Length: 229
Image (cartoon, rainbow, N blue to C red; front, side, top):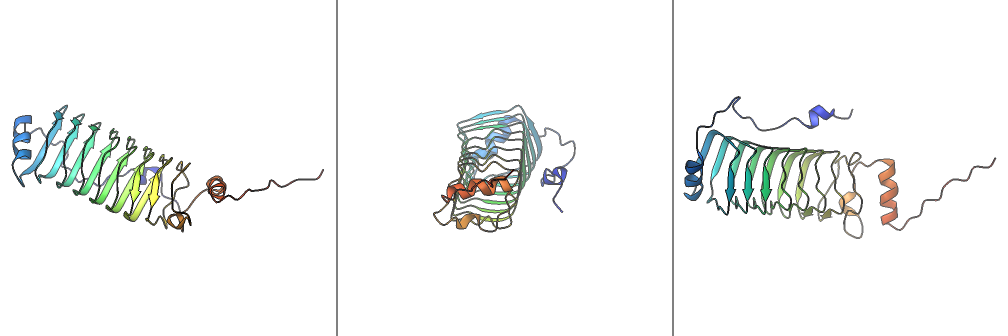
């Protein structure tokens, strides 16, 4: 039985309800500059961070609402039970980070990089993640719904327990990955880039219309049946 849309949109982050703003901007910046510091138990609203580099910061039980991250490096950080809601990421880096039970809701993050990162229990809903880079990342338990992943780079990525619902994968690069068991039937997979033998798509679930598209990539022409009157 197919999963309901409500199930597919259920998040992973286990954040304290009604979490207060217990840290200010200056406290946050100071902890991000300190090596291996910890930011926990606080919500942040409307922050604008620009040209900031975190130094192995651990974020736990944190909510970011309506925040802007402009040229912020979060590479090598750890995120556990973190919610990003209505946030904008511009030229940001989460490469080599561990995202564990993290939700992105109604976020804009074109070109976000997760290169060589670890994603375990991540929700991306109603968001813009076009051109994101997941090369050589390890991804387990990813739910993405109503999200653009157009022209995303999914190269040599380890995928398991991935759920995609109404996502835009047009012209995405899917190379040296396995989509076996992944339901792509509600997604737009026009122009996806895969290896010559289409091994990445083996075992994936597609709709009849998508099967016709993929046949076209193989150079197969499907002849319409002629009905005699």
